[in-house]
Image 1 (cartoon, rainbow, N blue to C red):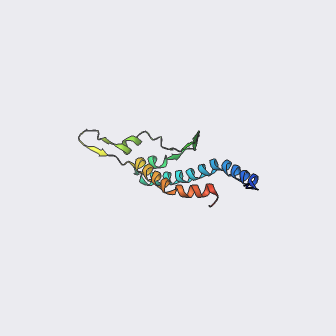
Image 2 (image 1 turned 60 degrees about the vertical axis):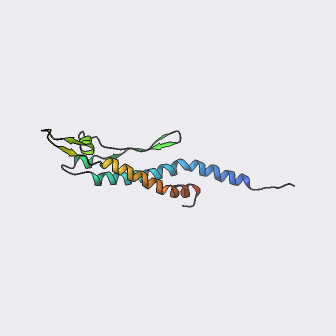
Image 3 (image 1 turned 90 degrees about the horizontal axis):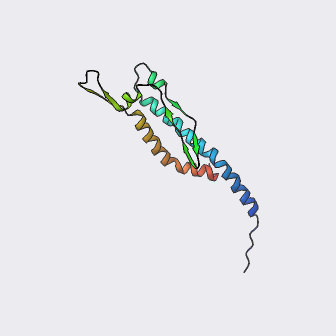
Length: 127
């Protein structure tokens, strides 16, 4: 019994093309979730002078091997005191942390888990 399959060259060519598009699709998907994370953390950041909220920034996506990462940063020196809480100057009481970065990261990670099917659809060409 002999089975002949024709047209595989074109199929292989299409698959290789799709494979080359994967990094760009991944970065676009991650960048969109990064935008969402940035908005989330800004909205959760308490405002006194506005410096803390204004200084959140989304850094460029980093790729290492088959891993992608994205950082949302803030260089305001008192950020840890707002995020995690602190004692008052008198030391008699504690100001509780807001955990705006922690909560925003957790929500974004959950959203990404739920949205993975859309990523697979984009990679496979189903949009």
